[in-house]
Length: 339
View: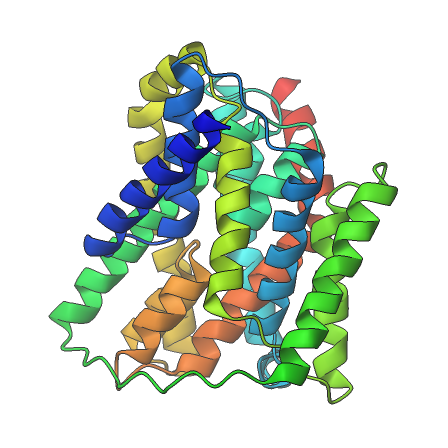
């Protein structure tokens, strides 16, 4: 028990430091780093299965709150643009994953999940469910998210973005109760049907998207999201070993090169969209940037000239595409590369 308290304290310190530096996903990365440090010091902790599944189900519920009826409506009315932009980035990331597997940088489908430009935590969960190395996938995903977000924030600052006032948070009991009910449903599915990969993530997402369409919006307060992120961070971090950390450190330069290549290719897709749809360059950049949907949406809202609904809808459409075709894509690309 003392070790768990030490892990919680260390996590809080790292989260606080990351928050002061304005790093993205601090509530997930902090516990992940703390878990890895504790595990590599010889403490054999393991997060109980129900807590790990609860983290997944709450994350699925949270992601569903981002796919509002307004966002889905924007996708439906401009489906051709979203098809090109979303699939274009997915194809580019799959090609990069193929190259990393072909050149034996990463094994099997790990490279495909690591380069998948969706919601980073969801990609890590799905990668683990489908047999990839979740530790390397997490490293690639969050390294890319940090690079993309910091670069986008710098670009926004250069273009003179002005941060808007944050509206006060008002808790709606009905929306919160529905969200917790959806999360508990995901927990039940994840514990009961273990043969359904990523069921604890996908079932709450499905319910969370359907309920607002029926007139029942969900609301998940920030502390609950932080709890989910902490559980997920511990679940991944505690699986690290000294050998895996050494290997990950050796792969960092190649990962950074692949991230820069992916960002450059996505920027080209953004330029095409900007030209065809007469978008401003900042909107096109944020809409096609590979990852960090929440963080990119915040950066978009801080710039007066950016079409925020378009950015969120493009990021959401790509995420939905990866949820639907990700497992098949990972297996197919891995087989092609290994041949």
